[in-house]
Length: 238
Image 1 (spheres, helix red, strand yellow):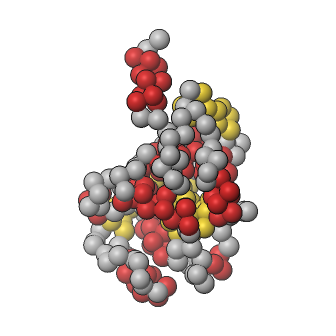
Image 2 (cartoon, rainbow, N blue to C red):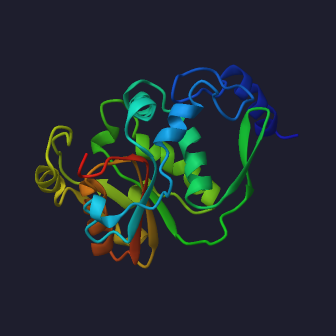
């Protein structure tokens, strides 16, 4: 057996999977019984988001798993700011199954792809970028995009999209202010985007302003279409 094949089970024991909602150790379990009820109540019955609930601009569409409330909000904030970037792998697996129809298998705490998505819809996966990776030292959408791309058997290219100027935080701004804050804030590489169907990955879609601005940059660079996915969403009316 190769070195990596030996290391994976050992690493799973040293760094066991945790429930993103309560931070408890999952080990070989697929779900956390303590959090399952609340998480299920926040799960969207249909992942595809309604255009009237968000500003999509030129996005071909968007999908998310949860409402950004309760234990889901806690999990996302832990993933973004609480040193739990590993939760991105949990949510990437959920996105692969719920949105794209992948079949995954778990053995000894390790999740692997069993059946790929029925349709190879995208040519490229790219995360929403942050300036210099953000103060946390990593970009949460990037941590989501890489395992999701692996499940979808699609190339992941973080360099396809860059943040071209600093922006203020979106929190606390209304829909109009959010749209203005990120207008023209992103650029895309034509060499990577041109002629490609792009899957854009983010952690939360609120107004849709950031995803729409990213899509605009990718389409200007020659992308054929851009579809966005995220862990959670907050409708404009919330």
